[in-house]
Image (cartoon, rainbow, N blue to C red; front, side, top):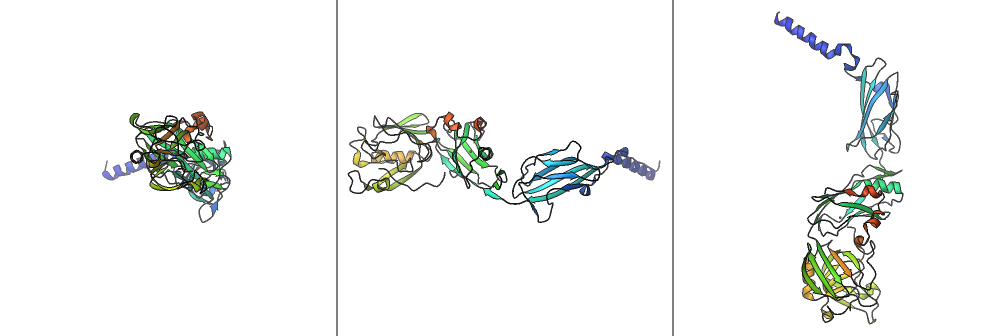
Length: 410
């Protein structure tokens, strides 16, 4: 056989193979744009209302066999295809302000495959923005994660949508945790127990473009990364007038202290370090004690570690050294010697645990005066979640709102 005949023979064989032996399903898909209709405006500058359902209808005797609709973030729009292939309609909400690519496969009345790809954009809507707290950095084992919303969310179903799209991941040690709705615009996240030392925590949101309710869609959110330091716990026994300071379970120092006197008793319970000031001026007017009162004060205070927004500190109190370890004479703060206060100041960071026991004062409130989150039992904490038991996820690796006006309590 000549080389020319061999080439011709091979070409014929290839053509037969490519033609699929007359099988219409093996032929190159035809352009199906004329055989389908969309409920949304495709292409151009028109934008689709994201609250509407996307519907695709077959025309001219053809049938729809498959539809995929994906936004620019890679999220698939779920949908349902009619049994007779006459119609496909979306069953999940469109994202607002999104760009979608839609791929439709069809068959005509002879069984030949058709295909059409098109795009459309959804209109922007009011955005629900999330600000996570605290800022990225290193914190103590008691530091909660916070999420501040730009608009209130009150409906239980809407809250579930938000909560399911706020993610906290921790590594290397798996932990169990959940969000708690403090109010309609604020959530806190904590694990069941304190964060493990040296844990890496990543906080992120997948709420962007997600429908929360009619007219309100999730917006973008900046992720944050936290690192947890040593497990530092300072426990003050107000009745015994002493603080024990432990790091990773080991007793490091025992410090004589004085706490709130009758009428100004220090709050019991677990508090979290909010910040530190090497020098702060404490004025009793800011806590309702008028000048001229026997309890009035106005003086500079050194080495002040804040544990409530209303002004409770652990600080140096050189004027009360004779009472430290013996009696409670302060206006609510935990006072100690200059040397001990300076040492304490250098040992702690934001998020470390400061606990008071044995005081005649009330228990630290959970949310309105700092971070008293740990004073709620886990069962009570779970009642604040919109998704309940589903929130008790085992994590594999997860910032703080602006402080209210500072008011010291000497």
